[in-house]
Image (cartoon, rainbow, N blue to C red):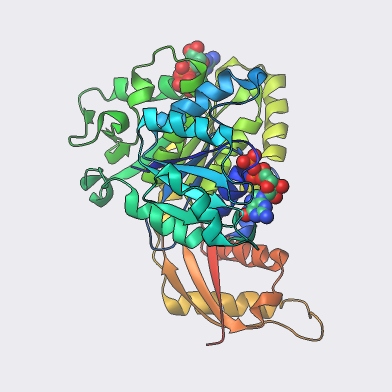
Length: 437
Ligand code: GDP
Ligand code: GDP
C-alpha cells in the first residue's frame, strides 16, 4: 500500500513549495504536456530506489481565518488523522508563533507520528533556528530550504525510515499470470456499475484475494479464459453515502490503486466530456508510468449527434495521451466490454514486451539517421548506442554525446518512432539519456 504523508502547518511556511519539491517528477516531459492538469494538494513522491509515498498538502489545520474553517479544514484534519506520518512545517526565519503552538496542541491530540520540518533555513543560522523550536520536544527534526531544494533528500530519508512496514500481501506483486487492473476516475463516471457488472457476470469465479487489507480488497476474475486481478474494488462494490471530506480523500485511494495496478483504466462520462478532474486522474496514471486505457462510459445515453460531438471533443482533449486506446462503453448495458478487455490486453502486452539490446540500438540508429537532431550552437547531439533498462513502462537508456542539447520535440520524435516501430499501444515509453559511453 502506498503510505500517506500529510503536510501540516500554518499558512506561508512553505508547505506548497515543499509539496512541489517532493512530488515533482524527474520526467519533465510528462509535466509539460498540455492538457494535463494537476491537483495542487495530492501527489506521490517517488525517490529512486526507495519506497514511494503519497503526499497531501492539508493547506492548514488550526487557527485559520474563520471564514476558511469549514470544508477545507475538515478535509485537512481528515487527511492528517489518517496519515501514516505527519510533517509539521514551521518557518525557521520567523520562529515559533501562537498559530504554530495551536497546531502543535492539535497534533498532540491526534497522536500521529510526526517529524518537525524547520523550513526556510537558507541563508540563516540553522542551529539557532532549530533551537527556537527545541521546546516543542520533537525527536525527529529536519532543517530544509524547500525553495532551494536543500535538505529534501535528508527529509525523504527520514520519512521513508519512519513509514510503517509494508502491509501488502506479497502475492499482490508476484502472480505473473494475472493482469492487475484498476478502474479509476472521478465520482459518478460509472466505476461501481462496471465492476459490479463484471463481477455479476463472473460471480462463480470472482473471489476476494486473501491477505489483502480491508481497505484495498483485490478481486480475482476470469474473463474469456484470461485471468485478472481487479485492484481496490472494495469502495466500488459497497457504495455508501460519503461526505465531502471523505470524497476528497478518495484521491488517495486512487493514487494507491494506480500504484498497485499494471493497467489503469481511466473512466470518463461521455455526456460530460473531459473535465479537469478527469485530466488530473490521467496525469496521476501518467506520472506513475502505467499502461493506460481510456473507457468512455455512458455511451448509451447519447444521441447520434451528441456522439459526434463527443468524438470531436475527446480527440481534442485527449491529444496528450493519443497513444492510449479510448474505448466507448456502456457499463449499464454491458456493451463495449469485449473491446475494453482487448485494449487492456494490448496495453499490458506493450508495457511488458521484452526487447533485445540489438533491436533497440538499431532503432535508435535508424531514428537518428532518418532525422538527426538540429545543430545547436554549432554542435549536434550524437546518439551512439542504446539498451533496454526496464519494462512496464518500457524504458530505454540511450548513450551518446551532447545529449543535453536534445530538445523536447526531438525526444518526442524518438518516443513516437519507438511506438511505431515496435507497435506499442497504451503504454508510456521512457528514455534515460546517458552522456558518454
Ligand atoms: P504555504 O502557504 O505554507 O503553502 O507556503 P508557500 O509554499 O506558498 O510559501 C510561502 C512563501 O514562502 C512563498 O513566497 C515561498 O516562495 C516562500 N518559501 C517557501 N519555502 C522557502 C524556503 O525554503 N526559503 C525561503 N527563503 N522562502 C521560502
Ligand atoms: P462511480 O461513482 O464511478 O462508481 O459511479 P456509479 O457506478 O455509481 O454510477 C453513477 C451513476 O451513473 C449511476 O446512477 C449509474 O446508474 C449511472 N451509470 C453508470 N454507468 C452508466 C452507463 O453506462 N450508462 C448510463 N446511462 N448510466 C450509467
